[in-house]
Image (cartoon, rainbow, N blue to C red; front, top):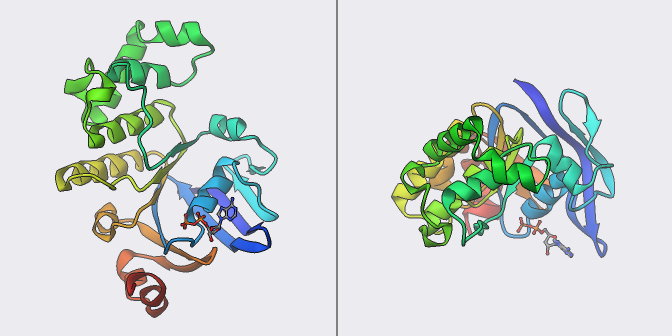
Length: 246
Ligand code: ADP
């Protein structure tokens, strides 16, 4: 496993308040990582730094085998480097079918005409079916996205991100609002996705994190409070005090 992203000594202040404080973080390729921490710990800001939405005041963010800095890049350049982000609320094209949503998301369209015709090529169609299979949507390809359940919309959006073939996928609270069966399926999907890429999951549901079976990073006051297996971090007295004990 080689390092895909390395943050070191990163700090961000908002009006003099340090939301991220001398943060260092590394993720490999492939690797799954869960991020937990109390409200206000800096989890959203951490992801905003990776996607380029927020630029740090100090520190380094180095990306990939070419050792390039993400700090000089725009959000769209970073997305093109292979960083995909899933926000908590699903954002799919509600009036389009599942197939059309996936077709629009496929990597490498060079313009609107590619988007229109890609799905008509055999390669595009096969790729869509493969992603639908991986996201439990094979039987729903012709359904209108707006009619899907909350869980299925979340899977469609995960599928749309996978269609872009990201090297790093950031996922914010995927299990929120899901039934236990949907949570189970989401776990399988993310574990599968993390076999070939880096996946960072921010989640409050500890049972869900346990099932991911990955290393956990605990953020608190903009820094890493603890890191390790779920059993290691959940037995750490400081983690219990600031997060679990609440
Ligand atoms: P989390 O996602 O872990 O709840 P955030 O990254 O959203 O934490 O926020 C970390 C801290 O930074 C919080 O105290 C929050 O109020 C503050 N913060 C985040 N974004 C801004 C902003 N744009 N302006 C001012 N304060 C902010």
